[in-house]
Amino acid sequence: MTDPYPFLITIPHGGFLVPDEVIDLIALGPEELRYYSDPAVDEIYDFGSKVSENLGTSVSRMVVDLNRPPYHLAPKYPDGVVKSQTGHKIPVWKEGKFPGIATIHHLLVNHYFPFQEKADRLIDEKDIQVAFDCHSMLPFGLPSQPDAGKKRPAICLSNNGDTAGKERPGVLATCSGDLMRVLGEHFMEQFSVDGDVLFNTPFGGGFISIAHHWHRATPWVQIEVNRALYEVQTGNPGVPGLIDRERVSDLNNRVWTAIAGFWDDVGEKTER
View 1 (cartoon, rainbow, N blue to C red):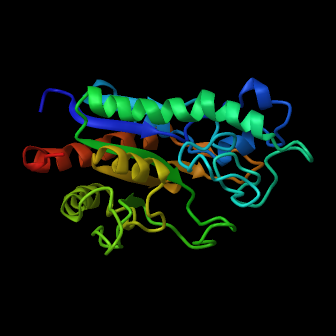
View 2: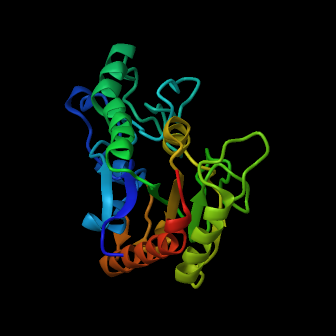
């Protein structure tokens, strides 16, 4: 295939920036912001002109998490769109400095909603056939997560379905089970030597893939690459991880081979 593949690549957690309006309020330092982001994903999923569109952000997910519903706010949702604590239950903001509702609204208007609106616009304007929401994950679940302490697979592919990638009764899957099966086969070809390739484990899919599939019916798949595949040392919130750039480049090639091979198999048969 010589034309750009009809893919939208979204990368919502690759940024480290703290916007000026809250920079004096945040308690986390640069290394903590990096640890709780998805480091190096802008390189792993950089497919350039080989895909129709790419959409990312420079803003840290600890300030505005684009993969959360806009109404998930603390204290009810400490891991919501504007977080009150990290996965280790470390306060994100200085004592007594959690942003007020007007500041939160300003953050969402300037950083959250433009991303979501652009995703929908690109799908319409570029005739996107499949969207991939692209992430990395820590090797083990954090204390506040459902899989706390458990070892994670090499790759997690999510469609809001079951552990076979199939639709669950009464639940809208963001991509059909048939497409997930083919996609999984191509990821297995590339990553089985590194560990498991699992469906919807430990993540079933986030707000971006679910909301935009509801809105436009475009197939969406959330991809999670284990950070152990490219970090020589993952570190901890206060110690920087060490990234192997050769591994990052290799991952870029292998992820691309998997998703391009998937489309080469199913593209002509797939209709939105």
